[in-house]
Image 1: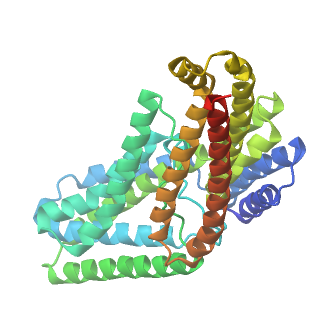
Image 2: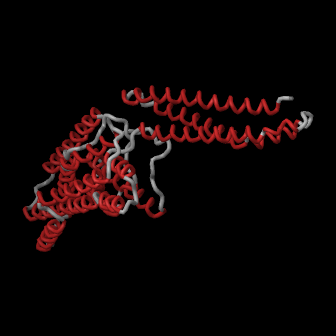
Image 3: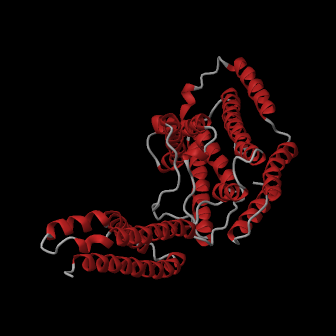
Length: 401
């Protein structure tokens, strides 16, 4: 992401996090800045998809003049070169700047719905899997091929999930209690980049060592290998370039929705924050407690209805206790059902806190859990009070007069 894009994303997200309701113009400005940033990046480097396809065509045409070269006899050297180049490509990819507010607890925000081009991702994953697969088939298993292959395999799995989700029409909205797996902290982010980057360099070094240990390769074979590696990398860059052009498609769709008033600015801002940074733990928890608030309000209404419907219960003689009990049960059925739901909600939330507790080594989680535990106790007290109120109503209705 360019500087314009990162700045705009953080600005929009800070507006929402601060609780300020952005107007339509601010949202449209952010979306158009995203679109302009993509256009500027394409113009600055001057490498568009047609240039890449032209270069691929030229290399393919050049390879036709080397059809007589026996490359199979130098296959081990070839897979060493190919895997080394892929490792360097992934290393350069890793060196690209990252953005996002990582001090907050945010769930990992990859969703199948956010994948604009599942087929392109599948092709990219398969293309990334090709060198390690050939390396393992020709030279046998080793750390380098297995390590590089993990990235391609991961992308393939993600693309298959996205394709299946699209086919069955299922959305991957944030769950009520998502798995407590959060985006890494700045410290973990830096450490991870350093470790993975060092592994990429190590893989490249091992492949270079393997190349040097093989027998001498004729010049014509080296030329063919250079062309094949260039072709491989150009196809990979072309796929990524095409994916990049699709990655801002959602901004045009959201812009249209805002212009025709299909979504409100608040909803649009939440979508932008989710796409840029992911859902916050606090937002997910607020949604849960808001649901409890609504259930408590509905419970109060149901309890008042129960009291009103039991006003005439004293007309039933006390010896008809079965009829009185049936009358009380019918009158309090809705309130009891709501109370049971809230008790189950609190139990489920307690289990979720236990799952969060397994990650208390992260200081952010430990801090968040203190506030969440306090809120749970508060709502537990409110539910206990509601339960006590219902018990009073039932006991009063059944008590002999």
